[in-house]
Image (cartoon, rainbow, N blue to C red):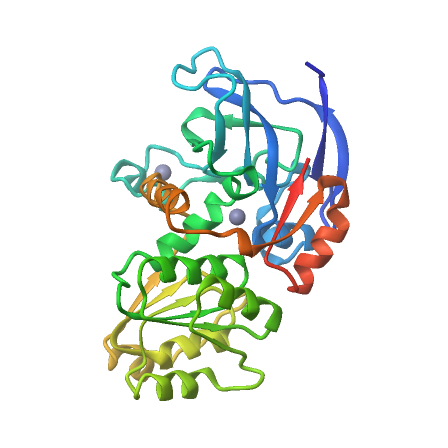
Length: 345
Ligand SMILES: [Zn+2]
Ligand SMILES: [Zn+2]
C-alpha cells in the first residue's frame, strides 16, 4: 500500500483549506483504516471552511476536514475482533467519552465530553480515514456509496422528525438545506398528512416538492404563518421542525405549531434570539425539543431501515465533484443553490 495520501486540510486559522499530501494514518489497537469512496459536505464543514465564530472558538488547525463518508475497511487494529478487511462501512462522527452520566444511560449523542471526527480529529475528506471501531456502521450492499455517506445527516433528520408520532399529522419544516430536505422525506414516508416546506431559496423548495412536501412556501413572497393557519383552518401544525437557525423561522414555528404541539430545533442560531415565552410557548402548552446528532445507535438502526425500504434521498444529491474541486464545491454550498454536494477523494 502507498504511504502517502491526499487530504483536504484546514491548514490555518482563517478562511479556506488546502489539499495536502500526508502520511496515511497509523492505527491504534481499536482503530480501523477505511479507504474512502464517497463523502459529503455538511453545514459544519462550511462553518470550518468559512471560519465563522463557532469555528474560531472550537477548531485547532491543522486537521483533515469532513465527517460524512462511506468506504471499505482496508486494515484493522490488533484488538479489533468484529470488523474485517472489505467491510462496507460508514461512521458516526461523534467520539463519545463512554464514562459520563449520559453515555452510561444510553444517551451518548449528548455526551458531556465528546469529540468530532473532522473537527477535533482528522476526518474523511481524504483517501483514507482512521475510525475507532466503536464508531463504525455496516452498510447494506444495495445502498450506493453516495447515499451511504449521508446516513449521518439523514439520521439528524430522523431524530428531529420521527421522535414524535407523525403518521396522519401535519408537519412544517423551516429551512430546506439538506437536513431539512431529508426531514421532508422522512415525514412523507412516515405518513404525515400535510407537509409544509419553508425556505427563501426556490431551488431548494423545488427539491422539497420532489421529496414529498404538499406545499412549498417562500417567505419572500408569502407569510408562512398566515398561509399555514389558513390551510389548517386555524389549527396550525402538530409538529414543526426548525432546521435553518434563523430567528424569523423560529417564530414561524412557534406561531404555527398548534396548542399542545411540538417544535424540534436543530438549526443553530449564530446569535442569541428573543422569545415571547408567555404567548409563544407557555400559554400554548407546546414542547420545545433541542436536537443534536443522532442517538447512538438507535437512530442509525431506524435510518438504515428507512433507507433500505421506503426512503429515497437521491433527489437531494445535486452535485458530484472530485475532492480537488473543493473550492467550487464550497462556493456552491455557500450559495445555497444546491442540495447535498458529494466529494469523491
Ligand atoms: Zn454532518
Ligand atoms: Zn460521555
